[in-house]
Length: 142
Image (cartoon, rainbow, N blue to C red; front, side):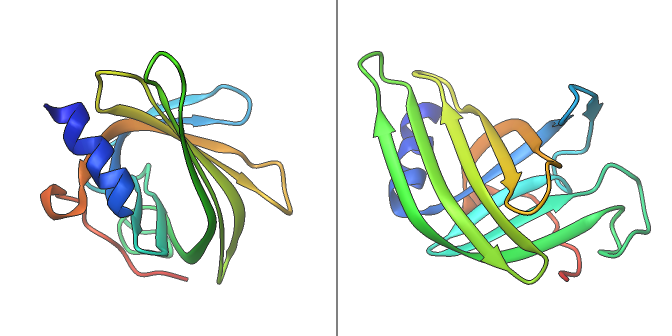
């Protein structure tokens, strides 16, 4: 049931991936708080928030918050029912290719943000939920 809800949210372009784990470019891992670490998409508005610290940072919640407009959005389902979702996101402070994978039968997703002008890739691992069901707290954006 949660998988079906997650797929509908992807199709409607109205979802949040609430991350409990961040994976950095060299494989370093940080276990983080779900409600302050997330990737969201609402229509064509994307938000990337990384807040591995308890407070402070440019966004006021322990990290950074970047917003941008999503384009070139594509969704594919393979023969096993696994879903791949990709897009480009451009805005103040962000220019990146974003890819999301959702395994068949699960609402646990991974989102990889690959910046276009650096190699500071980051992967969010967490739960894909409809935006209306999300409990995230968005900090101040760039």
